[in-house]
Image (cartoon, rainbow, N blue to C red):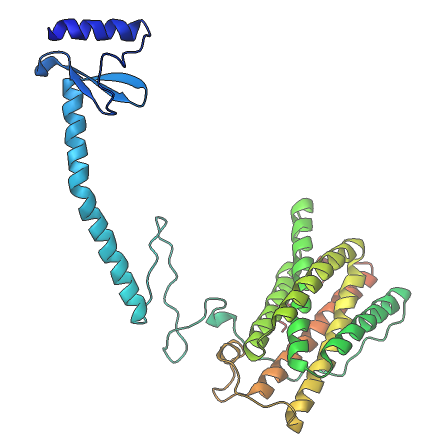
Length: 347
């Protein structure tokens, strides 16, 4: 009888006819067509039918049983590991992120043996600012392009004075979001030029990227001192979007004018930070303790104050002024930047 049923079902399957009337409408109905050791088990899933041999059916059932048995154990193991990680976080411990590639940062410490707390810069990237730099130097504009650069910077200062007035903390924060752009643009374009022409850059790529990174660290420090409001953050987005594209085009057209503009921007930055220090000395701005990031980055004493931070930032701006005026002078002499050694490490 079983063989007759099996033959009838197989004929219907081969002929493409539906066998729904012959079998149960259950979604997992099983029909044994032969003795168990040689069975062909039919199953229904949706509206389709298929067949597997008895041995395959036994293996499938065995695997399913094993999965059912091991699934709760695996879930319990994951739950315990997650709980252990959360507990470690609560205890203040560092949860290591495992990676197939085996990449991990070696343990970094300060000179006194304490753990280095920063991921954004390393101890060998810190320095003591050279405060002996001449703050009063000024490049007198003589050519038409120099005068254009000088007047452009003076015009850009007008809306800044109107918006920030004597709120030098907010002014400095905005200034640093702009000042960190030119070095990155110049370094990027020099990098691409070096790739296109198969030539060295004379170290200027590194010097300009180093300048951009230094300016970014100024910003990270100022953010610790001045918590920007939502409209100030929005203003940063707008100014950066306009300034980046404008400076990119300017550098493509005339690098010597671009570097001259940055030189004059840095001169204005020196003036702004000098006024900032005057307000600190007069008591209009509280001389609060220096942020920890500034103490480590500039290797300041542990009891450093806001005045110390502004002093070293102003010195950095003076060095950037010198670098960009120097770069512009190289172009004015009809040479390429790679023809003169770059002042790498000149903060």
